[in-house]
Length: 189
Image (cartoon, rainbow, N blue to C red; front, side, top):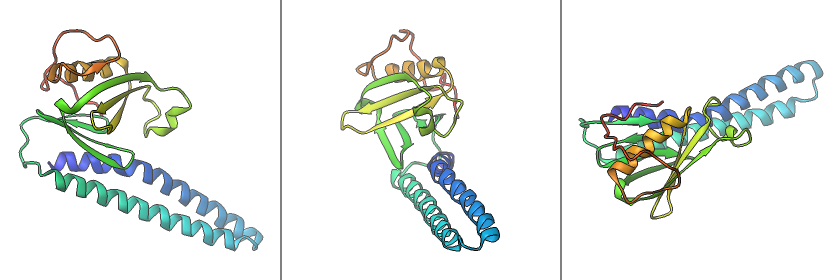
């Protein structure tokens, strides 16, 4: 459980941390300009407010992720758990964190999966710039999560695992028919 909590908090903090680092950079830049010109002190104080707001957002995201994991009521000793980007695969369900929301869903509730290559425009939405494939997992109740992985083969292994645990999942991509168990699924961080 501690591993899942730490992983989800790390993923939840990625976006606010980028905003906070940008705000701090902006703050240093305005401080430097204000020091030499003397007229932009108002801009410096405005950037301080942005810093405070970005810091508060980071704290709120961390609290949300902790509350989400606490509400899951997981046992301390999980038999087997695999991680792929922002998603943890357990024997009977998956747990994910995407765009500030947690998702805990049984495999039977997954409706379909899409596999797409990430283009340069959408690459900014993901925390890692080197990842080039995204796998979207849609549930029956219209909730979804997105995994960003480096290689297409990695996405195919996750798809094979999902298709093994729930053969009713509609996959809009040709995948090998060979089943893949949770123990055989590699870890992708």
